[in-house]
Amino acid sequence: MSQSTGTESAITLYRLQACPYCERVVNKLQEYDLDYRSRFVEPMHSDRNVVKRISGKRTVPAIVDENTGVTMSESANIVEYLENTYGAGGAE
View (spheres, rainbow, N blue to C red):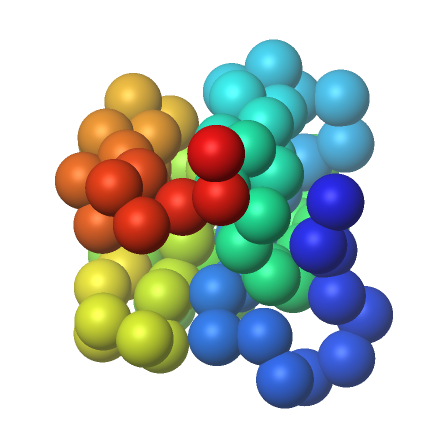
């Protein structure tokens, strides 16, 4: 697992505790041994202003990848992005 508590990670994942969609993204990040930083957000949808500022939506999971300049939400989209971007060169 490569979750980072520092600020050196280029990937930031905005997520909720015990969210199955967020865990799907976490599993993919771990599968490819990618360093990432978790930012846990407010449980109330209307209070997720930090997520709205970065992705334009209040839904989680949301990811910011400074390596590529990509910001996106929706777990299926994020998993597909990670597979296409890091899958071929990921640790197998």
